[in-house]
Picture 1 (cartoon, helix red, strand yellow):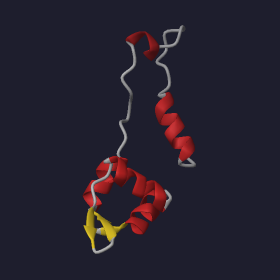
Picture 2 (cartoon, rainbow, N blue to C red; picture 1 turned 90 degrees about the vertical axis):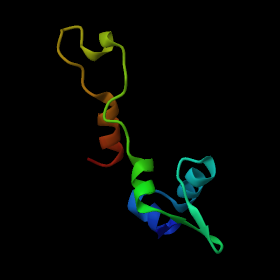
Picture 3 (cartoon, rainbow, N blue to C red; picture 1 turned 45 degrees about the vertical axis):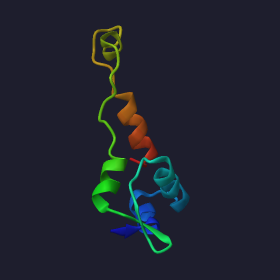
Picture 4 (tube, rainbow, N blue to C red; picture 1 turned 90 degrees about the horizontal axis):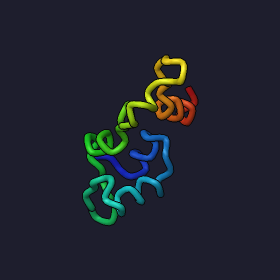
Length: 82
């Protein structure tokens, strides 16, 4: 179990973002005293993202017939600084 602050550091997010995930039910947490504690496995499950999004077949190829880039993955990589 880790604190909200540690969960925020590990995900590169703000502590308030992690607390919001807990309030919204996106991340399970246990209350220990006056602090929320997060299980590391639950944190990993909460931040996992699908590698592709279900899109119509017609959108998977360009007009030239070539496969279209995975725009969702490209956006994630840009946001992660890669």
